[in-house]
Length: 172
Image (tube, rainbow, N blue to C red):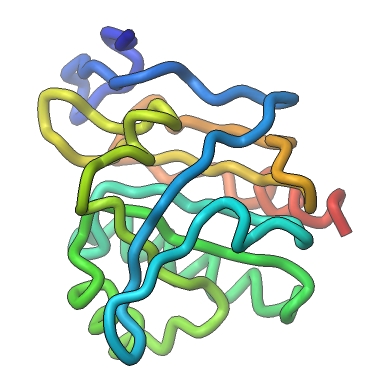
């Protein structure tokens, strides 16, 4: 299943693969990768037990995505280790690690779907035409239920930071 015209990139309609993830449903499982002392993986079960925010974006190597990651990094610091926070893209774990090190990103962990794009398929965030993620924010409760979901209609626009952060605060 795909959703034609679900998002636009500079006004051009694009297709998202998979079903939309919506508030109230159990979060689809995922297996993402990151680089820290070798290649590591993170799954849905790894983030259960705490509220989680997933900041999904096309690539850390673009201005809006870099800004989104920096803004969430700054804002999420107030929660300390009471939440899980992930930036999810198809960037390679090595490139994500380098970006986060260079930009002093310490409050949000990078996680890559590069191996099989299953996160993008299962969460409805993979842009079929471009083979990259759209821009989206998801907040999960401690049991992995989706409490907030925003797919940004225009890929080049920023998400609603205030609403997403309020959704995280509601889970504490």
